[in-house]
Length: 164
Image 1 (cartoon, one colour):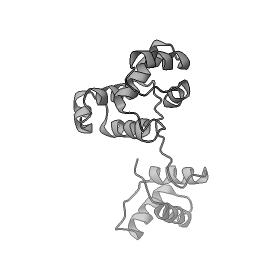
Image 2 (image 1 turned 45 degrees about the horizontal axis):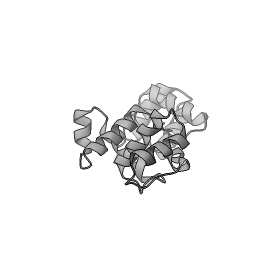
Image 3 (image 1 turned 30 degrees about the horizontal axis):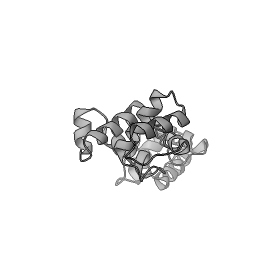
Image 4 (image 1 turned 60 degrees about the vertical axis):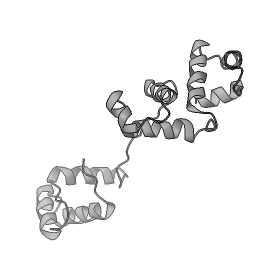
């Protein structure tokens, strides 16, 4: 679907009013009046006017919220664990996760969280330990401390923040 800026949508609605709510006539008149713009057909003008009547001048894009237990998140973190210098294009080519999805997951999972000071391999290990303990955060923190004595030991609240 083509995204039109609000000023063009307003112009389409004004032209629709001039053509007595005739969508085909409005499309023809809009094409004549604004030759340097994109030319919507009657269905596009109808869809845009219905959207504006519903209260949305600008189309709302839905973003997918990735939780830590999503397969793509775990795969992304595991890939970073195995090769910290891997490129997003290589991930897209070899694994099949789209490049922008990979980058968005990396940005939200690591950089945007309170776990930003943990390297990706430790985050992957925390998630795996949490899965072994069936989401028992305190048990996961204890097992993580036993299994990796040379690392910093997160408490159960830190692991809970990671998975939310």
